[in-house]
Image (cartoon, rainbow, N blue to C red):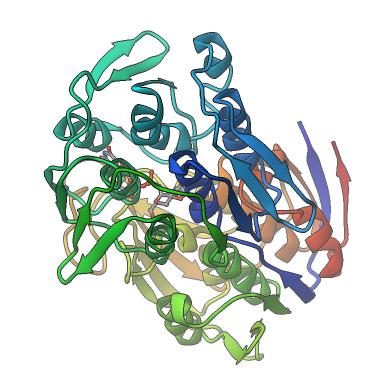
Length: 437
Ligand code: EPZ
């Protein structure tokens, strides 16, 4: 288990550069499975989620070449079935395998998907995914260690309505419908920028997809797809994380590769809290301009709302705002576990079952602690803490960097699931810490 020992209380100042978004790149790699010719993906970050997806693709015969600069080539010309025992070795390490279903059914007529991993931030069921696949004609068999799928009559376009605009289930529909016979109409789709970038990739491969108004996406199936060449969309979750780190540590961070368009909702909130930013052609400078930070009321939501992945690092900055802030988490039912460690460090955060500060959500009256009230400003104290999940873990690290004194943050390898070279980046920002593997 890796650990960092942080001498906190120093502002983070300097530059970090982003690569492609974790939540696009991993799906783009799966899309390559659909291509009969090789694909090239640029700006792929060196993170462990990319490693897991690479191993799974390689098990299915995809030849992958990955360079330090982020250039990845994926040759899916000779896809083949993998041994169940080899696939199973990856059980619990990522949520992306569920997206292999459609492409493997198209390429091989069958698929075995191991039990999924990912952050423990709620139940994270896969019922939407399974329902979607059944709509296309897949037959699903549940096994003790995963699921086995087949499509005895091929996959056919379908009319699909999602009960909630799930990112993963929308991607499931896209990756399955592009080569299914006939037309698919998806309503209730998620429309996150990462999904739009996946659609752009699929169009490059030969797919016919139109994004209509009101969360409706129409796909006309085609019989063959080729590879693509694509530069991945930047990681806006990482950008927001470093922005929050700049604010919480009274620092000044230039985030190379960040773009305004995909971050507008975040930028509005950042400004309301009292953070400052300057938008340049090659990135965004985020800094604490001095003076008091202001409390805010935020509700996380699907795009174009305030992303659920942005709240955890921002909550650390909100412990420094003068007054009461409210964060109502409406995407995941259990995403405030990380606040316990912050309270141990002197934060005053209370979590509630009620839908506070905005509209009632689907978690109201269901005993989920999904609203947080943050009272500030407080002086954060050093502590020994353990990283619980990806975004919560990043927020713990930021709290340790902001707190005066020496903190030990363990289990930090989890952060490398989604933040490329974060240890090097901390060094570049002048953080005072030691790292042990
Ligand atoms: C993606 O998860 C991201 N992960 C998440 O990022 C992100 O927080 C989330 O989208 C929302 O933007 C990846 O892209 C790998 P969902 P995903 O399906 O697709 C419920 C991070 O830190 N649901 O949109 O799994 C689900 O429980 C991660 O980078 C069902 O009920 O999210 C949740 O409440 C964490 N049944 C809601 O929908 C299903 O079958 C939204 O989940 C599927 C989802």
